[in-house]
Length: 448
Ligand SMILES: Nc1nc2c(ncn2[C@@H]2O[C@H](COP(=O)(O)OP(=O)(O)OP(=O)(O)O)[C@@H](O)[C@H]2O)c(=O)[nH]1
Ligand SMILES: [Mg+2]
Image 1 (cartoon, rainbow, N blue to C red):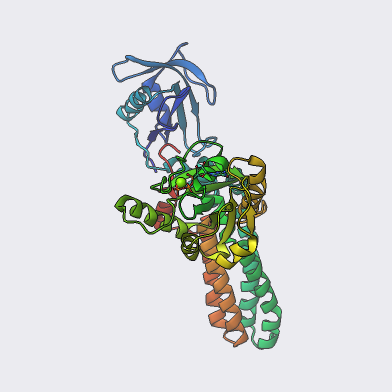
Image 2: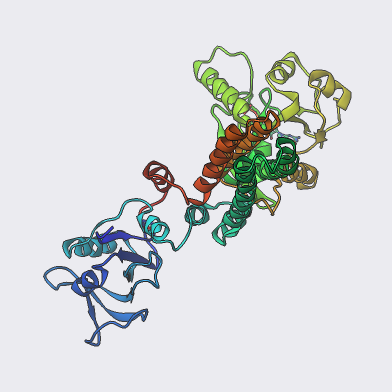
């Protein structure tokens, strides 16, 4: 821990400013070596000071602002120094090199936040929320990250852990005073509390919502050639992303576009028209289409509503799981030639929508349907896959404890309860070994 670390905290590339951050016992010493204030004198704690960044020979690297935030009132609870430079990779790199020459070492990914956690400023779920906030792409992900950063997940888990301690204490009392508390009394008193706790934790483990928040809703546009898949992708994302022509087999590979609906990212994939073909390039494209199909949360089977359905439509439909699909009858601007019954005979989907890629008004019901599929509750206690996995382990242990109790095996129930308590403590990081921390912080960017 004693080592002083440094990194560029801003994203690479050109920008208004770049920030080099230093943390550790020697942060102030490093800052004094690389920074010359315009008005000579000692730097004041937490006051931004104008001056020059210099290299080891005292040559000016940039005009800049610098600040020292002395422990413990800093992000890491160590002495932290920051230099605000003109944005740009070359300058930031040179100033970082100056910091390293002055005795700092390059920070690992997430090391500043790791120190904030190890020094008790934030718990592990909050540390993860920092990364979550940085990488948030949809509004739902941003809001979930802020809730977690403010301690939402931690307080939910700590409340559950407290209730579990009560149950453990009750069980310990029964085991210590068997002559005063009968097995039946113990079971009757503890089993309902156990079941309620398990049910509440289980309800918080919404994997689907967590997936939507992090990955967005994956939607694949599939169908035989020339039905208007690429036209629909372009219309939905309001951009000419995919090439459209009246030649069947125009799209040779998957093409992706993104929109945000109701705060959730919707990742649309346009695919090569599904058909048997001798063209080797098109065949690879069709294989990519099948992969997109299997990885999609929702499949939009596109059909041309202005022409009779064909064998190729039936073959495309055969590749689609109807429970995950919606059928689109495109080209609704032309006289209709296909009924909803015809579609359902092909694929028993719940929804059939008539759309026209050239008419935004007809796409509104489709946008509404996608928004509904992408919707997530704004009050989820747990949204990180890691937290959900640990909470699920706790639920399994609690259920097992309930069964042991019913069988009269109090000692074994106590072991299960202990295991549940450990699983909960992993979420907040109250119990976290190096391996777990390495796993969590390896996802971070350098400089955070
Ligand atoms: N009238 C009408 N024509 C459309 C509509 N949507 C697409 N088209 C036309 O249909 C033809 C095929 O459109 P694409 O979007 O390239 O079809 P695709 O399904 O991507 O075709 P492939 O890439 O070959 O599989 C083009 O000439 C489009 O202009 C629509 O809603 N109405
Ligand atoms: Mg296409």
